[in-house]
Amino acid sequence: MTRRAAALLLALVLLTSTGCSGSPDSGATGPGPTRTSAAPTDPGSTAPDAALASEPVPLPPVRACYRLTFDEALAPVTRAKPRSCDRPHTLRTVFSGRVGALVQGKNPTIDSPRVQRAVAAECPRRLAEFLGGPEQALRLSMFRPVWFTPTLAQADRGEDWYRCDVIALAAEGELAPLEGRLEGLLGRLGWKDEYGLCGTAEPGTSGFEHVSCARRHAWRALTTVPITAERYPGPAAVQALGDEPCTAAARAVAADPLDFRWGYEWPTLDQWRAGKRYGVCWAPD
Image (cartoon, rainbow, N blue to C red; front, side, top):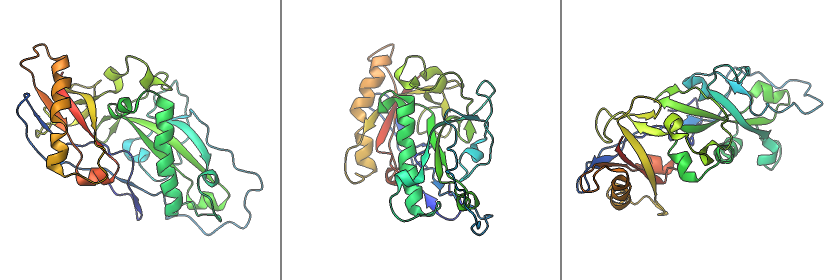
């Protein structure tokens, strides 16, 4: 998904569908899409204001809650006002900071590639710290990072903040409501049934879509397979990496260890370039 003029590869890598499935000795292949977002820009911004704020503009409040749609959450900028976290909401702020602390140098503009790359690298890290737990837990969840910076007009008035937020996907193009205490959630038990990664059908089939495990589903993601190669190994090689670990993971949850099915998703070249360096093992649920 490309946003406005300057596209940045977003850490969402949202909903992939490349995969294979089968019994311990079978499988199928298929292509898969990627998702990208873009640098926040503000076509409606005006020329710099004559007078900048004399005092630093306060940072956006951390742990603030918002009710945004999927498209609003992926937009480059937002003017949404926070609401009580006791009310229905789909986005929470996990961190806010100053752009100058990320980017060294002489007054970089808020929409410069240098600033946008720095924020795009920082916010996924802040989300992982906020949710806690091992890296694999985040990969097996429907949580994703999004971020905002000021519009050009706001930056001209002296706003120099960036904001890191968390969303959870219910399905492709749809956000799930956020409930309860999320800080450290992936280090605790019980989160998978609400925010875990599940599928509507067998991976690699036409009816397969990623959904939250809170939704009606047929398959569940079990574990991930790290791909440590420096360059993309090619579809056949990354597919083969999943055979042994996915067979073992599916056997471990099967009612009959001699008769079970498994599935595997591997990254395409585009997804690899976007930062997805792992595959996902699946089993019927």
